[in-house]
Amino acid sequence: MKNKILLSLITVMMTVAVEAQEVPQVANIMSRETMSLNGDWHYIVDVQEEGYYDYRMNPTRWGFFRNAKPQKPEDLIEYDFDKAATMRIPGDWNTQDERLFFYEGTVWFKTSFQAQVPIENCRTLLYFGAVNYDCRVWVNGHEAGHHIGGFTPFNFDVTDMLQNGENTVIVKVDNKRKAEAIPTQIFDWWNYGGITRDVLVVKVPETYIENYKLELQKADVNAKQREITMTAHLNKPEAGQTLTLTIPELKVKQQCVTDAEGNASLTLRIPSKRLSLWSPDNPKRYSVTLASDHDVVADSIGFRTIETRGKQLLLNGKPIFLRGISIHEEKPFGGGRANCTADAHTLLSWAKELGCNFVRLAHYPHNEYAVREAERMGILVWSEIPCYWTISWTNPDTYKNAERQLTDMIRRDQNRANVIIWSIANETPHSAERDLFLSRLSKHARSLDSSRLISMAMEVTSASNYKNRLQDNMNEYVDVISFNQYIGWYRDVNDAPKMEWEIPYDKPVIISEFGGGAKAGLHGPKNQRWTEEFQENLYRENIGMIDKIDGLAGTTPWILKDFRSPRRVLDGIQDYYNRKGLFSDNGEKKKAFYVLQEWYEKKK
Ligand code: GCU
Image (tube, rainbow, N blue to C red; front, side, top):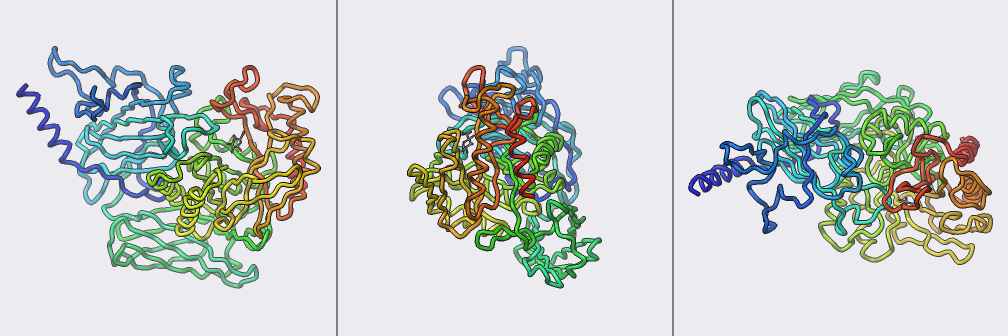
């Protein structure tokens, strides 16, 4: 018993010795000095969270995070990561272990890496591109931090937890759905659990550039000179640091000095004729370097403006029609979370083949590779947080969670020229509580980034026979009025030609979803549900109908590719897939693909 008390004391001292510390997301992780922890991690499925709670449901000090090993033959340790199976990280667990296809609960992961510490005047951060959904991280038995939210990056300062030689990282991931979560407990996509994006060990100076933003200021299309503002923030409130912004191709090298909060800003004035604006037809990006006294980050940044004028959407001051498509973050073949440039390139190439200049990355922030690949390919982006359906509008923690995900989505992609719309919700039921929750989110988004447009996927509120009137109090908090409609799928396709749409807001309109399902290869008369002909006819009727909508500035039909959903259970047809894709889950085009492609060709 004495030994156990002594061991407890040592454990408590060890745990107390090092404070857990989440630090704000480091901007542009791809330009940092990193060591990848991607690879095969050991994992233990822990249905009752035996590795975290004792049999009275109190957090235990003897949890799996200690990675304990028997010291004496009689010692009782009922887990051993090093004997456990491994799975590829990044990667969801559902598609890597058939026992976990439907699994919703806790899985523990373990990896290790070598380090030589301390590193003079440097901090070491442990970065996760995303973990779905609730994640706790330990380094050498010290809790590094706890993060909630399945689709945005986070990082912990683990400097003081490291030891020379081998360091052990243990991660507890719990993807159980909860009413108070964001998203809530029902959503029409697969609840892929696990460490679904990159894990990196990041070396940064003690004082580093935490985030920065370059923004082309709006101006008359014939302006002789353009202004580009830069704001930057250090991780510490250090005044007097000199920041140097360099853009060689624009002959820019300009400096500014940080204030007492560690903030700095400057304005570049560039002759218009020297500046090539980013657009889908000209996805021009400039090599940019930002250096402080101790840090330097490199990026490739495009310059463009996006704004509305009445019902017009203006890119670089000129009207644009958004030929879009919605996309879930699923690998092009075989399902599972997409998480690399190759996945993104295939999906975005399909969108390009469709004739798209725009994609709605539904219903959550996609991985950074996808946003950057779309930027390189000249594809505009609608990026969204998963405030989806029946959110717990009156729960303050739910709001904080939503606001945190919105902040991290914006912070990560605020320098991506192709991102033009931040979306704060999808198909949320009307109520005063919902309006308060979402209006706060809208104001928060605008406070972080006034250069982009705000929207949300609304629902048509009243449809008396053929009159569809969009009425949503949130209209004053968005720049673009977007709504989902399913004439032909959840309503009769023969009504399409008779439909009238009343949208009483002087703002551009995006149909953020329309479409219907088809099983690839199933053929029959056009009134037979689930045939490709049914979906083809639905697209034809819908296009004829929406093309008449006043102020239509774009569409993002639902959806590029069939995707897994636990809500789609029709045997032989859905088999846990939502079949509204224009591509099947094997990458085969359905007949409706060509209907949309033909329309987009005309809209160019
Ligand atoms: C909704 C929802 C989508 C869903 C789609 C459907 O509009 O936004 O997430 O997949 O309908 O019913 O297929």
